[in-house]
Image (cartoon, rainbow, N blue to C red):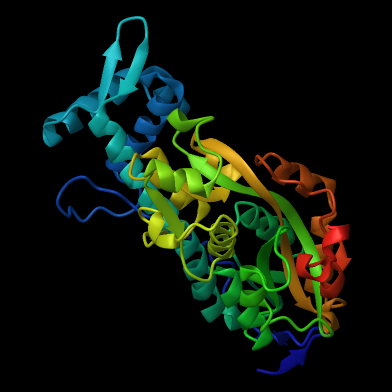
Length: 389
Protein backbone atom coordinates (compact mmCIF):
# COMPACT_ATOMS: atom_id res chain seq x y z
CA UNK A 1 0.00 0.00 0.00
CA UNK A 2 1.46 3.35 -1.05
CA UNK A 3 1.86 6.14 1.51
CA UNK A 4 0.92 9.69 0.53
CA UNK A 5 2.39 12.69 2.35
CA UNK A 6 0.12 15.45 3.62
CA UNK A 7 1.11 19.11 4.22
CA UNK A 8 1.31 18.59 7.98
CA UNK A 9 3.52 15.54 7.75
CA UNK A 10 0.49 13.43 8.68
CA UNK A 11 0.20 10.22 6.69
CA UNK A 12 -2.46 9.17 4.25
CA UNK A 13 -2.62 5.81 2.53
CA UNK A 14 -3.82 4.87 -0.91
CA UNK A 15 -6.84 2.61 -0.39
CA UNK A 16 -7.09 -0.96 -1.60
CA UNK A 17 -9.77 -1.93 -4.13
CA UNK A 18 -11.86 -3.43 -1.32
CA UNK A 19 -12.00 -2.28 2.28
CA UNK A 20 -14.35 -2.72 5.25
CA UNK A 21 -17.17 -0.31 5.82
CA UNK A 22 -17.38 2.03 8.83
CA UNK A 23 -17.08 0.25 12.19
CA UNK A 24 -19.35 1.56 14.95
CA UNK A 25 -17.36 1.08 18.13
CA UNK A 26 -17.53 2.29 21.71
CA UNK A 27 -16.47 1.12 25.15
CA UNK A 28 -18.62 1.31 28.25
CA UNK A 29 -18.80 -0.01 31.79
CA UNK A 30 -21.66 -2.42 32.46
CA UNK A 31 -22.76 -2.96 36.07
CA UNK A 32 -24.33 -6.08 37.54
CA UNK A 33 -25.14 -6.28 41.25
CA UNK A 34 -25.12 -10.10 41.09
CA UNK A 35 -22.46 -12.76 40.64
CA UNK A 36 -21.16 -12.97 37.06
CA UNK A 37 -24.21 -14.00 35.04
CA UNK A 38 -22.61 -13.84 31.61
CA UNK A 39 -24.71 -10.86 30.57
CA UNK A 40 -23.27 -8.50 27.98
CA UNK A 41 -24.42 -5.07 26.88
CA UNK A 42 -26.90 -3.06 28.93
CA UNK A 43 -27.87 -5.09 32.00
CA UNK A 44 -31.02 -4.62 34.11
CA UNK A 45 -28.80 -3.11 36.79
CA UNK A 46 -27.55 -0.46 34.36
CA UNK A 47 -31.20 0.55 34.02
CA UNK A 48 -31.54 0.46 37.80
CA UNK A 49 -28.69 2.97 38.18
CA UNK A 50 -30.38 5.23 35.62
CA UNK A 51 -33.56 5.08 37.68
CA UNK A 52 -31.64 5.94 40.85
CA UNK A 53 -30.06 8.93 39.11
CA UNK A 54 -33.50 10.01 37.90
CA UNK A 55 -34.90 9.84 41.45
CA UNK A 56 -31.91 11.81 42.76
CA UNK A 57 -32.37 14.63 40.26
CA UNK A 58 -36.18 14.74 39.96
CA UNK A 59 -37.33 13.47 43.34
CA UNK A 60 -39.83 11.24 41.59
CA UNK A 61 -39.72 7.58 40.56
CA UNK A 62 -42.56 8.11 38.08
CA UNK A 63 -40.64 10.96 36.42
CA UNK A 64 -37.46 8.85 36.30
CA UNK A 65 -39.44 5.99 34.71
CA UNK A 66 -41.02 8.27 32.09
CA UNK A 67 -37.59 9.61 31.12
CA UNK A 68 -36.44 6.04 30.43
CA UNK A 69 -39.61 5.18 28.53
CA UNK A 70 -40.88 2.58 31.02
CA UNK A 71 -44.02 2.29 33.11
CA UNK A 72 -44.06 3.28 36.75
CA UNK A 73 -45.22 -0.23 37.66
CA UNK A 74 -42.26 -1.82 35.90
CA UNK A 75 -39.80 0.62 37.51
CA UNK A 76 -41.28 0.06 40.97
CA UNK A 77 -41.15 -3.72 40.52
CA UNK A 78 -37.53 -3.58 39.38
CA UNK A 79 -36.60 -1.41 42.37
CA UNK A 80 -38.33 -3.67 44.91
CA UNK A 81 -36.88 -6.87 43.40
CA UNK A 82 -33.36 -5.46 43.68
CA UNK A 83 -33.96 -4.26 47.24
CA UNK A 84 -35.01 -7.79 48.23
CA UNK A 85 -31.91 -9.26 46.61
CA UNK A 86 -29.62 -6.72 48.33
CA UNK A 87 -31.58 -6.83 51.61
CA UNK A 88 -31.45 -3.05 51.72
CA UNK A 89 -33.78 -0.21 50.75
CA UNK A 90 -32.73 1.97 47.81
CA UNK A 91 -35.50 4.58 47.74
CA UNK A 92 -38.13 5.86 50.13
CA UNK A 93 -41.54 6.94 48.82
CA UNK A 94 -43.17 9.80 50.65
CA UNK A 95 -46.91 10.40 50.30
CA UNK A 96 -47.39 13.55 48.27
CA UNK A 97 -43.64 14.24 48.23
CA UNK A 98 -42.32 11.90 45.57
CA UNK A 99 -39.30 9.71 46.38
CA UNK A 100 -35.79 10.10 47.71
CA UNK A 101 -32.74 7.87 47.82
CA UNK A 102 -31.86 6.15 51.07
CA UNK A 103 -28.33 6.64 52.42
CA UNK A 104 -27.41 3.24 50.97
CA UNK A 105 -29.04 4.02 47.62
CA UNK A 106 -27.16 7.31 47.38
CA UNK A 107 -23.84 5.67 48.24
CA UNK A 108 -24.44 2.92 45.69
CA UNK A 109 -25.19 5.49 42.99
CA UNK A 110 -22.17 7.65 43.83
CA UNK A 111 -19.86 4.61 43.80
CA UNK A 112 -21.10 3.72 40.32
CA UNK A 113 -20.71 7.27 39.05
CA UNK A 114 -17.19 7.54 40.46
CA UNK A 115 -16.22 4.42 38.49
CA UNK A 116 -17.79 5.91 35.37
CA UNK A 117 -15.93 9.22 35.82
CA UNK A 118 -12.64 7.34 36.02
CA UNK A 119 -13.45 5.15 33.06
CA UNK A 120 -14.62 7.90 30.68
CA UNK A 121 -11.18 9.25 29.64
CA UNK A 122 -9.72 5.73 29.62
CA UNK A 123 -12.56 4.53 27.38
CA UNK A 124 -12.10 7.44 24.99
CA UNK A 125 -8.38 6.72 24.72
CA UNK A 126 -8.91 2.98 24.24
CA UNK A 127 -11.57 3.61 21.59
CA UNK A 128 -9.11 5.80 19.68
CA UNK A 129 -6.32 3.25 20.10
CA UNK A 130 -8.54 0.42 18.83
CA UNK A 131 -9.66 2.35 15.77
CA UNK A 132 -6.12 3.60 15.10
CA UNK A 133 -4.98 -0.03 14.90
CA UNK A 134 -7.47 -0.51 12.06
CA UNK A 135 -6.85 2.88 10.47
CA UNK A 136 -5.16 1.44 7.38
CA UNK A 137 -8.25 -0.56 6.45
CA UNK A 138 -11.11 1.46 7.88
CA UNK A 139 -9.90 5.02 7.32
CA UNK A 140 -7.56 4.57 4.37
CA UNK A 141 -8.84 7.69 2.64
CA UNK A 142 -8.76 9.82 5.79
CA UNK A 143 -6.05 11.82 7.47
CA UNK A 144 -5.59 11.06 11.15
CA UNK A 145 -5.45 14.02 13.52
CA UNK A 146 -3.65 12.83 16.65
CA UNK A 147 -4.91 14.90 19.57
CA UNK A 148 -3.46 14.34 23.05
CA UNK A 149 -5.23 16.48 25.60
CA UNK A 150 -5.88 17.15 29.24
CA UNK A 151 -9.39 15.89 29.99
CA UNK A 152 -12.06 18.48 29.28
CA UNK A 153 -15.84 18.22 29.00
CA UNK A 154 -15.85 20.10 25.66
CA UNK A 155 -13.31 17.96 23.79
CA UNK A 156 -15.71 15.16 22.81
CA UNK A 157 -17.93 17.88 21.29
CA UNK A 158 -14.92 19.17 19.33
CA UNK A 159 -14.12 15.69 17.98
CA UNK A 160 -17.74 15.12 17.01
CA UNK A 161 -17.96 18.44 15.16
CA UNK A 162 -14.67 17.92 13.30
CA UNK A 163 -15.69 14.48 12.04
CA UNK A 164 -19.19 15.72 11.18
CA UNK A 165 -17.78 18.60 9.15
CA UNK A 166 -15.01 16.66 7.39
CA UNK A 167 -15.51 13.17 5.98
CA UNK A 168 -11.76 12.98 5.33
CA UNK A 169 -10.59 13.44 8.94
CA UNK A 170 -10.34 10.82 11.69
CA UNK A 171 -9.69 12.31 15.16
CA UNK A 172 -7.51 10.08 17.35
CA UNK A 173 -8.32 11.68 20.74
CA UNK A 174 -6.55 10.40 23.85
CA UNK A 175 -6.47 11.92 27.33
CA UNK A 176 -3.49 12.40 29.62
CA UNK A 177 -1.92 15.10 31.81
CA UNK A 178 -0.90 18.48 30.37
CA UNK A 179 2.83 17.87 30.82
CA UNK A 180 2.61 14.47 29.16
CA UNK A 181 0.76 15.97 26.20
CA UNK A 182 3.37 18.68 25.64
CA UNK A 183 6.09 16.05 25.82
CA UNK A 184 4.24 13.93 23.23
CA UNK A 185 4.11 16.86 20.78
CA UNK A 186 7.77 17.72 21.33
CA UNK A 187 8.69 14.10 20.57
CA UNK A 188 6.47 13.85 17.50
CA UNK A 189 3.99 11.43 19.09
CA UNK A 190 0.95 13.63 18.33
CA UNK A 191 -0.14 16.51 16.08
CA UNK A 192 -1.86 18.64 18.74
CA UNK A 193 -1.29 18.88 22.50
CA UNK A 194 -4.09 20.20 24.70
CA UNK A 195 -3.06 21.84 27.98
CA UNK A 196 -4.39 24.49 30.32
CA UNK A 197 -2.63 27.37 31.99
CA UNK A 198 -3.89 29.49 34.89
CA UNK A 199 -3.54 33.22 34.44
CA UNK A 200 -1.82 33.68 37.81
CA UNK A 201 1.26 31.72 36.71
CA UNK A 202 4.42 33.77 36.35
CA UNK A 203 8.03 33.01 35.43
CA UNK A 204 9.30 30.43 37.88
CA UNK A 205 5.78 29.32 38.85
CA UNK A 206 4.86 25.66 39.18
CA UNK A 207 3.17 25.48 35.77
CA UNK A 208 5.96 27.42 34.08
CA UNK A 209 8.60 25.05 35.43
CA UNK A 210 6.49 22.03 34.48
CA UNK A 211 5.76 23.12 30.92
CA UNK A 212 8.82 25.07 29.77
CA UNK A 213 11.04 22.12 28.87
CA UNK A 214 8.55 20.96 26.23
CA UNK A 215 7.57 24.31 24.69
CA UNK A 216 9.32 25.45 21.52
CA UNK A 217 8.23 29.07 21.06
CA UNK A 218 9.87 29.48 17.65
CA UNK A 219 8.35 26.29 16.21
CA UNK A 220 5.00 26.12 18.01
CA UNK A 221 1.80 28.09 17.81
CA UNK A 222 -1.06 28.22 20.28
CA UNK A 223 -4.68 27.82 19.23
CA UNK A 224 -7.06 29.20 21.81
CA UNK A 225 -9.68 26.61 22.74
CA UNK A 226 -11.59 27.91 25.75
CA UNK A 227 -11.35 29.98 28.90
CA UNK A 228 -12.53 28.15 32.03
CA UNK A 229 -12.61 28.88 35.74
CA UNK A 230 -10.68 26.77 38.24
CA UNK A 231 -11.77 26.85 41.84
CA UNK A 232 -12.56 24.99 45.02
CA UNK A 233 -15.36 22.45 44.69
CA UNK A 234 -17.04 21.91 48.08
CA UNK A 235 -19.84 19.97 49.70
CA UNK A 236 -22.99 22.03 49.29
CA UNK A 237 -23.27 22.41 53.08
CA UNK A 238 -19.95 24.32 53.08
CA UNK A 239 -21.30 27.08 50.84
CA UNK A 240 -19.87 30.45 51.97
CA UNK A 241 -17.65 28.94 54.69
CA UNK A 242 -14.40 28.22 52.82
CA UNK A 243 -12.55 30.51 50.42
CA UNK A 244 -8.89 29.41 50.56
CA UNK A 245 -6.56 26.45 51.03
CA UNK A 246 -5.47 27.83 54.38
CA UNK A 247 -9.08 27.62 55.58
CA UNK A 248 -9.35 24.07 54.20
CA UNK A 249 -6.31 23.07 56.27
CA UNK A 250 -7.46 24.86 59.43
CA UNK A 251 -10.92 23.26 59.24
CA UNK A 252 -9.41 19.78 58.84
CA UNK A 253 -11.50 19.10 55.72
CA UNK A 254 -10.85 16.01 53.61
CA UNK A 255 -9.14 16.98 50.35
CA UNK A 256 -9.12 15.06 47.06
CA UNK A 257 -6.26 15.84 44.69
CA UNK A 258 -5.59 15.46 40.96
CA UNK A 259 -2.84 13.23 39.62
CA UNK A 260 0.78 14.34 39.31
CA UNK A 261 1.51 16.05 35.97
CA UNK A 262 -2.03 17.33 35.48
CA UNK A 263 -2.50 21.04 34.95
CA UNK A 264 -4.92 21.21 37.88
CA UNK A 265 -2.35 19.60 40.21
CA UNK A 266 0.16 22.26 39.18
CA UNK A 267 -2.39 25.00 39.88
CA UNK A 268 -3.11 23.46 43.29
CA UNK A 269 0.56 23.33 44.22
CA UNK A 270 1.03 26.96 43.19
CA UNK A 271 -1.85 28.10 45.43
CA UNK A 272 -0.40 26.10 48.32
CA UNK A 273 2.97 27.78 47.81
CA UNK A 274 1.39 31.24 47.55
CA UNK A 275 -0.63 30.69 50.76
CA UNK A 276 2.34 29.09 52.57
CA UNK A 277 0.37 25.89 53.19
CA UNK A 278 2.38 22.68 53.34
CA UNK A 279 0.87 19.80 51.31
CA UNK A 280 0.98 17.60 54.42
CA UNK A 281 -1.42 20.06 56.10
CA UNK A 282 -4.18 18.94 53.72
CA UNK A 283 -5.84 15.70 54.78
CA UNK A 284 -5.95 13.55 51.65
CA UNK A 285 -3.42 15.50 49.56
CA UNK A 286 -1.92 12.17 48.44
CA UNK A 287 -5.30 10.75 47.30
CA UNK A 288 -5.69 11.26 43.54
CA UNK A 289 -8.43 11.32 40.92
CA UNK A 290 -7.92 11.65 37.17
CA UNK A 291 -10.70 13.97 36.00
CA UNK A 292 -12.65 16.99 37.22
CA UNK A 293 -15.78 14.86 37.37
CA UNK A 294 -13.92 12.21 39.35
CA UNK A 295 -13.05 14.78 42.01
CA UNK A 296 -16.57 16.20 41.99
CA UNK A 297 -18.12 12.75 42.35
CA UNK A 298 -15.92 11.93 45.35
CA UNK A 299 -17.12 15.11 47.07
CA UNK A 300 -20.77 14.63 46.13
CA UNK A 301 -20.68 11.06 47.45
CA UNK A 302 -19.34 12.20 50.83
CA UNK A 303 -15.94 10.55 50.39
CA UNK A 304 -14.23 13.97 50.49
CA UNK A 305 -15.12 17.55 51.40
CA UNK A 306 -13.17 19.68 48.95
CA UNK A 307 -11.09 19.51 45.79
CA UNK A 308 -9.96 21.67 42.88
CA UNK A 309 -11.72 21.60 39.53
CA UNK A 310 -13.67 23.52 36.92
CA UNK A 311 -17.02 25.16 37.57
CA UNK A 312 -18.85 22.96 35.04
CA UNK A 313 -18.02 19.79 37.01
CA UNK A 314 -19.10 21.37 40.31
CA UNK A 315 -22.42 22.59 38.92
CA UNK A 316 -23.14 19.26 37.26
CA UNK A 317 -23.09 17.51 40.64
CA UNK A 318 -24.67 20.25 42.75
CA UNK A 319 -21.53 21.29 44.65
CA UNK A 320 -20.61 24.68 46.04
CA UNK A 321 -17.95 26.44 43.98
CA UNK A 322 -15.43 29.12 44.94
CA UNK A 323 -13.74 30.67 41.86
CA UNK A 324 -9.98 30.95 42.25
CA UNK A 325 -8.49 31.77 38.86
CA UNK A 326 -9.46 31.90 35.19
CA UNK A 327 -7.39 29.66 32.97
CA UNK A 328 -6.84 29.32 29.25
CA UNK A 329 -7.11 25.96 27.56
CA UNK A 330 -4.75 25.94 24.57
CA UNK A 331 -4.09 23.55 21.73
CA UNK A 332 -0.38 23.55 20.88
CA UNK A 333 0.58 22.78 17.28
CA UNK A 334 3.66 23.04 15.08
CA UNK A 335 3.58 26.18 12.95
CA UNK A 336 4.36 24.05 9.89
CA UNK A 337 1.08 22.12 10.42
CA UNK A 338 -1.28 25.10 10.35
CA UNK A 339 -2.03 24.72 6.63
CA UNK A 340 -2.84 21.00 6.85
CA UNK A 341 -6.47 20.18 6.01
CA UNK A 342 -7.32 18.62 9.42
CA UNK A 343 -5.95 21.66 11.26
CA UNK A 344 -7.92 24.01 9.00
CA UNK A 345 -11.06 21.99 9.74
CA UNK A 346 -10.35 22.21 13.47
CA UNK A 347 -9.98 25.99 13.22
CA UNK A 348 -13.23 26.26 11.25
CA UNK A 349 -15.06 24.30 13.97
CA UNK A 350 -13.61 26.41 16.78
CA UNK A 351 -14.81 29.57 15.03
CA UNK A 352 -18.25 28.16 14.24
CA UNK A 353 -21.10 29.77 16.27
CA UNK A 354 -22.91 26.42 16.47
CA UNK A 355 -19.93 24.74 18.17
CA UNK A 356 -19.43 27.71 20.48
CA UNK A 357 -23.07 27.64 21.55
CA UNK A 358 -22.86 23.92 22.33
CA UNK A 359 -19.85 24.43 24.60
CA UNK A 360 -21.25 27.63 26.12
CA UNK A 361 -23.88 25.43 27.75
CA UNK A 362 -21.18 24.19 30.13
CA UNK A 363 -20.93 26.38 33.25
CA UNK A 364 -17.87 28.61 33.41
CA UNK A 365 -16.79 28.28 29.74
CA UNK A 366 -16.03 31.27 27.54
CA UNK A 367 -15.53 30.49 23.83
CA UNK A 368 -15.34 34.10 22.61
CA UNK A 369 -11.83 33.83 21.16
CA UNK A 370 -11.80 30.12 20.25
CA UNK A 371 -9.72 29.49 17.14
CA UNK A 372 -7.40 32.47 17.63
CA UNK A 373 -3.79 31.65 16.71
CA UNK A 374 -1.19 33.04 19.11
CA UNK A 375 2.55 33.15 19.66
CA UNK A 376 3.53 31.36 22.89
CA UNK A 377 5.79 34.26 23.90
CA UNK A 378 2.83 36.64 23.68
CA UNK A 379 0.04 34.55 25.18
CA UNK A 380 1.40 32.52 28.09
CA UNK A 381 1.12 34.38 31.41
CA UNK A 382 4.80 34.10 32.37
CA UNK A 383 5.67 35.97 29.17
CA UNK A 384 3.52 38.96 30.14
CA UNK A 385 4.98 41.60 32.50
CA UNK A 386 3.09 41.63 35.80
CA UNK A 387 2.07 45.27 35.32
CA UNK A 388 0.26 44.36 32.06
CA UNK A 389 -1.38 41.11 33.22
